[in-house]
Every structure is written in structure tokens, then in C-alpha cells.
Image 1 (cartoon, rainbow, N blue to C red):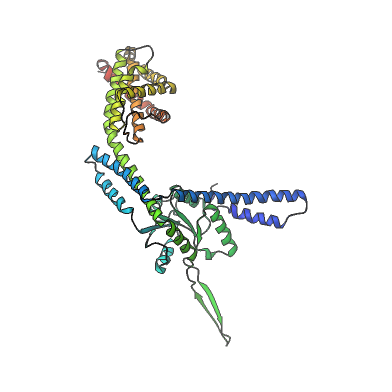
Image 2: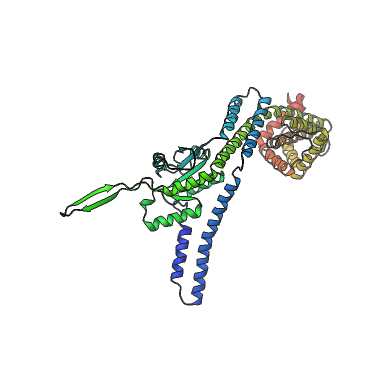
Length: 472
């Protein structure tokens, strides 16, 4: 059963502990039991507090400490955008990427703080922003821009709105508004924002709508979930005032209390004063990294279009070599020289420098991995089974070895492409190969290619290539 309203574990635990201390019995056994339960409850609360404190400290430590860190992040992004310009000058997204890089240069010295206000439906986001704007509180920054997101959740669904989350993450700081204890869905979304390494404050709004004991319990629970918590009442409930006159008359009216946001504004001012510039820098670095990933994705697409024909060319060269010189068992190392040249060509496409000797070493390592993973045996048996459906082609010597060699060369090429796509540009030759990463790529590509329909299509293509007279 999905938990809709979380139990106030820490708050109730601590309250229960205090009650137990007040009602201790005289017997040693009872005292021992009570002490144990109390220690567990208090220890649980302290553990949650320690975890939250560690999370806040980690976030503060990861904030950029100087301008040079931001400049470096932008420079790495610019390198990729320039690489895309060199390899695909007419790419449809190139001008947009270049414009965004220019904007990042301006972002470094931005003085206006961007504060996102997010949360569920009807938690008081708009009202809180209005109160903060109208009263012109000193927040410790020259200028502050408020950005209200759309509600994170709607009643018809429980999954958080992606647009709202992205809007919040794009800001310098986030106020996550709630009007009570967090639901399970709210808590998971709040954790998602924290995982994005985004500065957040949990704001308990509409606190005036609770009696004192409930308010304290909710605040205690929220503080166990996140160290940085503030309470507020952006629009307090109107209070009925009754006045008795000297003549016995009674006058009643509704009086609207002033908004209570002092705790929130003081905390924001403290954070923005001490970390304001670093928060802006952190936002710029996040944007640079996102732009870098976008440019890398486009660049990989361009390179993949160039890599696919090269892989296809070498797979059939390897297939023809194995077909012309069949052996009782497929020797993957026999095509190592062909695979080595493919590695050199693919490395050139992905800006990974390999000499021919180094490529031969890589080809041998990949062949050994394929044997160790059992890919050679599995693929040979699968291709043999498919070829058996045509007795004529199955009987031709070297057909199984030729198609298997072509298939495994293709697997090796596609695995290398995946491997190269996540590597930084190699400035020197001789960079070591991460065999564990390559092993994972080989397994993943092999599994994706093992669908029977895809394998049957490849075998049919192989027969047409290696046995054109029989395919006709």
C-alpha cells in the first residue's frame, strides 16, 4: 500500500521517548526496556539530522570556489561546440549552441539572483511571492528575480511535472513550499531536486492553520528530512475580534493579521549574503554541463553517420577473409589485422588517436574478451542454426565462418563506437583501454543484436554478399 501521508517518525519517536522517561517504573527490567527504546528513538532522530547536515555540507563544498572554475567549465563546452562546427559546419543546431555559449560568458558576472518557488497545488506559492515582492525585504543581493513553477503535482496524477522540475533546477536557489508534512510523492521529488546538487530550502507555509502541538510536530518532521527549513504564513487566516462596549453592546469584525515571513527572509538573506556569487556560478556551471551534453549528443550523431559505413565495410572484408580461408573453428584472431585497421579509422572519426600497432593490441584484447564472454560460440551456433534452413548455403564451406566473422566484427565496431562516444578527445596516442567498460559495451551491443529477426536479416545479407550466385 502506498503511503499518502507520512508518519511523523522522528517527531513521534522523540515524543514517545520523553513520555517513556516520564513514566519509568521502578523495576530494573522496565528501566532497561524503556532506556533501550528511548535510545533507539533518539538515535534515529540524531542519525537523520546527521545525514541532512552531511548533505548540506557536501552541497556547500561542491559550490564553485572561484571564477576560474566556471570559466573552465564553459571552455570545455566551447571546445565541443567548435568541434561540431569543424565536423558539421551546416549542422542545424550549431548556431543555437554557439549563441548559448556566448550567453554563458555573460552569466558568469550576473548580479541578479534567480529564486524558484515550487511545490504542489494550493500551497501558497503565488501569495508568498507577492508578499516578498511587495515588502521589499533586504535579501542581501542587488536584485532578485522570482520564478514560480507550475504545480509539481496535480490531483489527477502523482508523478511530478518535468517542466516544473526543470524550471526549478535552472534557477540559483529553490524554495520548496509545503502546507503540511511532506507526502511520499513530495518527499521523493524534493530528494530529486537535492540530487541535482541544487540549493533548496523547505518552507512550511500556512503554519497558522495548525494548533501549536501539530505545528511543532510537523516542523520537527520537516527538519529531520532537511536541515534548511523555514516556517511562514504568507496569508494568515482572518481572526474574529469581539469588542464589548460600556453600554453593553458587542461589536464583532474580522481582522487580517500581517503576513509572517520574517524567519524565511532572514534565512534567505544569510544564504544569499554568504553564498550568492557561488550560487550564480554553480548555476552557470550546470548550464554549461547541460549544453556540453547537448553538443556531445549532436556530435555523436554526426560521427555515427560516418562510422556506420566504415563498420559495414570492414565487417564484410572480415567476412570475406574468413570465408576464403575457412577453419574447423572460427579463429577471431585471424581477423585481428582487419579489425585493427577498423579501430584506427573509427578512432580517427572520434578523435581517438591509435597507431596501427596500438590498434592491433586493442583488436587482440577485444578478441580475447569476445572469447571469454562466449560471444564467438553463441553467435556461431545461432548463425549455423539459421543457415540450416537452407541446405544449399549451409553446405558451402566457410559460410558459417564468414558470416560469423562479419557479425562479430560488426559487434566489435558498434561496441567501440559506444565506447568512444563517452571519451574525451585524446591529445596523445597510447591512451589505455578501459577493458571493463568495453566488456560492458560488448555485452550490451551483443544482446541488442541477438534478436532473431535482426540476426536472420544479417545472415540473409551475408549470403547475398558472400554467395551472390546462390542468393540469386
